[in-house]
Image 1: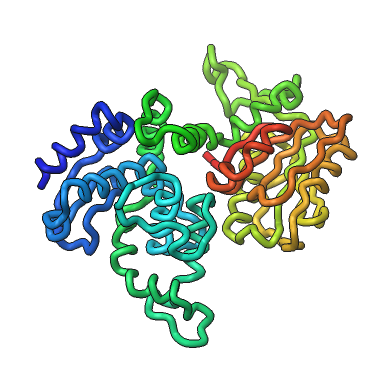
Image 2: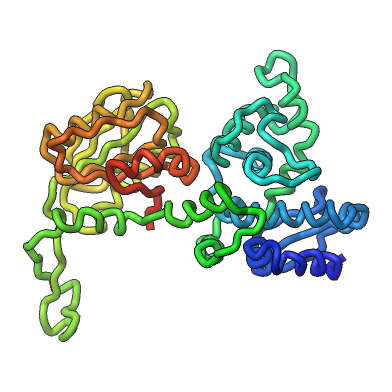
Length: 381
């Protein structure tokens, strides 16, 4: 079987260079105990001969393509969508692949199989599937709110779907490796067009906090240095005092607290805010907003306990107007992006950075966000 897989993959060298490159970064191994034919994760492609021996070359080729596409989408290596089970992320991944890649007769799940709309992000599908999964992963019970045919379908296939994502875990090194393949690929084969554009966009989305702040560099860097013996001079070591620069600017961070933002998202949002103090900020102004500005705070130290007010609809116009009216130099918007594009006042001099809560939100909204500022996803390192 291993030789058979190698023969099939070698055919991709000319016709599918992107798929060939990414699958060559993974080891191929047997696993007789898993209840699914093929799966990926931890830099491994696993197959169960009990299933694959019965598959035609065409079917096996499509199964391997599925895992290669999944790896290029980075689903096995990125942070798991909030509050989603292994089954939910596996089905969410399948729906994303089935919605974007043409497999011919290969039977992969598609959004219409669960009466879900097309064109949504992986995280969105995973969360919707999680809502449909019967309690405790078992069969739905009458009157439990999930007793429709979709829940029944998920209950019956739970073991196989859960096994599909069993190897998935966050791995920054592998993510960087995949990004390198995406950035160097010129011939996308059957992935050409919008799918290739989506993959290329995914390598540009994640920017860490330090890089986000570099977009404000002209107005943020202070001309005042603070001498300190805790940091050695670069040339003479501890014999002379070193120095650190302090940011001296009016920075406003706007936190989306609308109903579509999860508690875990809010935790990450305030992690972004707290990390600002590690990079020299002595004060950060923070507002919470949904359809209006709810809470205004001026922080001078890390915030441990957070009280959230609001949880209604979303209007980006409110924090935009607040930043402009109060003459801020920079505005950082922490959001999922699901609201109408705001109008930017003609006299607004405040620089804007949109920080999306995940890559799916970035893919959904970065087009209009880039008209008013920089865009990235959350990354606290």
